Length: 343
Ligand code: OKP
Ligand code: ZN
Image (cartoon, protein in one colour):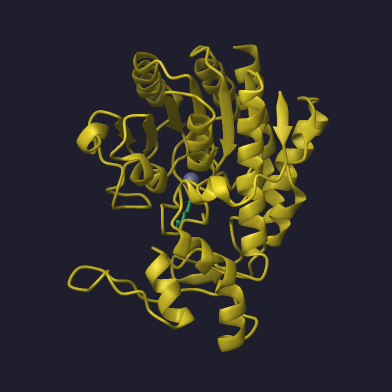
């Protein structure tokens, strides 16, 4: 299988992440993509190609222009105000507050455009996020050129980012940008299948009121897992999008035995939709030893998951999302890709 990769992901290399009351080294770090790439090379999984540059236009098909400008200038504004510390927001417009005023200062703008304090912006954030989106777009382009399956080794991830919101280590929604580009290249229906441990709240929100993109997600139940406030079963879409969002929230400790059936249901939902192409938001943080998650999939289960998705028999773009067990991330992604290739 073709892999698309850019070394520019290294520019997102923050100093701290706020987790469980402590400032710790970021789980979402450059080693993740390094490990995946070296596994792909070691296991001879196919050619690795750099991204092409599709510019900003396909990003603005999904994201708000003011949000994109904010991401482009956030670091220089923060640097001028505070110096070389990771830029992090501290408060949000929750219940009882207004959402219709964009603040003028960088602290206020960080608050307005984010939904958590776990997603640091540093000097290279925009460059890395932009490269990650181009990696997804290039994978999409190869699919349009007739490839059956392509792996976009995106980093930073994207599925938590909405039209004008960043958070959950995500800035630009790579999977959503690729799905929209597939539609713009002539596809009538695209299914996004999100198998990351965490609900893809950004992707769901972007396509919630549309029927040309089906969003299907299997994830940890939001009653106990991040992002907590989206991903429940009763979210099924709105307006003409009614019926085109499907969530399969699962309990803590879910293993393959408990995962396989909702996986089959989710795949049947996608089959019934009869998409022209499938975009997989691939998170391997469902792995048993993941440091921030609590499912119990084993490395060989990712092979079975890849095979099951391949049985959809549709052109498939695999977009990298989460997975934080560095010692196993390469093998887990490699197993998944091998499964997809074997069918
Ligand atoms: C991004 B992706 C756990 C804190 C969770 C954010 C997790 C973002 C996951 N102690 N912080 O979906 O893998
Ligand atoms: Zn995740």
